[in-house]
Length: 240
Length: 324
Image (spheres, each protein chain N blue to C red):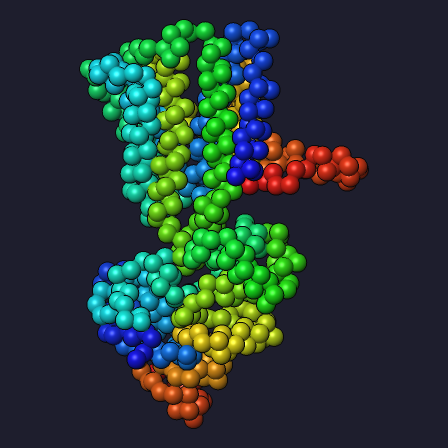
């Protein structure tokens, strides 16, 4: 059974203008599912709708047997879904430690467990331990991204929604972020990835959807996409 | 909770440390200090909402008025004891604050300021217009809390209330909830992606800050002995904003320092009349432009400079976490 099933959703920001038009997709557990498509296809809107920032006008979203389409983000988070929006998802005026605690507190009010979660995050990212009393504004771009990832790490999501993980990052840092995603999959986290970087998305995803005008234009396993990569990129760029 | 008891001990020490003042001061000066404690409670409450949660409400003074009028009217018409009247005022303000917070959940920044301002003006006009009940601009007499207009007992009362308010705010800000509030201020959407129920905590803070205001207003009403809608005018809100900004927005001691400083300055310059507001407005502009940390920020900078000269002095002067 699929971990996440999106069926026929219609959603948009303003009444009368639908960004998603009856979109349907499935995310199998333990896989990375990639979503590609031209600008304005509705990729980010899809993630926001799954995470409850937008409520679909029609259709259903089912996660692990539970309907999500009427829930709000904080409830969805508690069900085990994490959402990493574009850019860095950190609170600049909080210290590094407070940023991490925020992730842990929402789930576990008990102090020893929170401390244990923090320890785990610090051993995975030793740089963050050194700077734990610093304001997050004082971090470099790469460190900030590390903190964003560590913050998601701490909450143990079963499904991670990632929007444009490499946007605005130096290629070397982007490489590290993709390595993090692969590592998360190896630990059993299911990932739904939205990416402008088509060749990278095709490289790390197990199954892909190509969106256009709020609908699925193509779908298939990685193999089917690698064969037509060149055509896909041209189509996506030209938006035909 | 030994650390809890230790902090309680510290607050008692502060209380005792300030308790001798009325013995050496004149009645007038005691009154001025009492009033500045009243403003400390108001400023701290508003700062929880505006400084920590980033909700720039302009209705804080209204909740003080709601607390005062609810109590005064209940005492007058229903004959309830003063403390019960004040309690009812606090409950009423908390409910209204929660309601206002609910109305303003999706309103941000300047629109939030406008909406809360409209709310404040509506309540003030309601009280002015319903003069058969509230006596409007004629003023509503209220029984005195200690049956005497002498300021000394009220000094002890408001000193205690102010210390409790500071303490409650401190515990709140340094708890899990305090981090949630600052996260909401930094980025509301990101806070929601962290699983924080942003609506719940915004409403909570609106209600809590209304409670602070209503406690202060309720007791103040039974100190001055005469209520009128005048302190519910925008001037009063402006004073609270000025106090917090001059003291230091987003620093914990800012509202305390600012409230006492501005109230003392305002009394000192009483002869200037309305011209004081011009001076305060200029002060706010200078602070906002040049010293965003306000008086507290200035002191911290000075302490750090001193620490550069003498590390031992610096250790004494820079406590662990003054900021936020």
